[in-house]
Amino acid sequence: MSQLVFIHGPGAGGCAEAFRYQFEYFHGSVAPTLPGHLAGASCPSVERYTEWLRGWLWAQGHQGDLVLVGFTLGACIALQYALDYPEEVRGLVLMTVSMRSKSRAPDTLAFRLRAAQDPVFYEQWISAMREAMQWVDPVMRESLIACHRQVGPRSQHDDLVVIDQFDVQDRIYTLQPPLLLIRGMDDPLVLEEYEREIHEAVPGSQYIPLREAGHFPMAEQPVTVNKVIQAFVDKLG
Image (cartoon, rainbow, N blue to C red; front, top):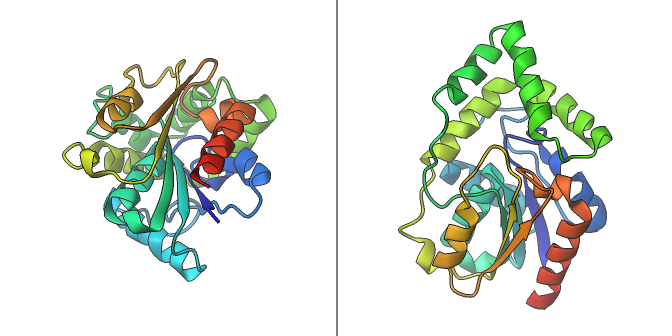
């Protein structure tokens, strides 16, 4: 029987609350909150996050038949896990992810650092997070904003640095587990279809584009995303 594991990123609340709709729908699933998000110190690389996640899962008896579902940083971790430990991963669902380093607007990282020090910039950062979640239900959005206030902009800065260092394009052809890619077509933050690039590099992978979904498909189109994930899991047997 497959064990669903939902892995969050630095956006949409910056913690496991981003997958509330999935956690409620898929009974028995798990959604850890990564270190440095509410408690502890952030990891300096995707590889270190992957080892932390593996230790967390093994400690709870989840050592195989994993279906890893992630977005942004969580998707990087899931992909790294599947490449490093394919024998433990039954399937992979990735959203808002690139297999190579991304290019960002010059002020993206510095803005987070200023927000961590200056109350004016902090509120601007909160407004930017709210705007990025324009497709999320308003009640859910404010819940995620409350999480962002707890996690803070410095954690997000550190995770963006980690994401920007992630590059597995030289290994992507070795990916073994079945792969489902979900793309929010109205993502205001990422114009390039990085997911399609992965889809074209991995034979047999499935690619699902969604309208009225942006950076956080699982929170923006939860009913559709849950159905797509359920169909993927059912097909795994």
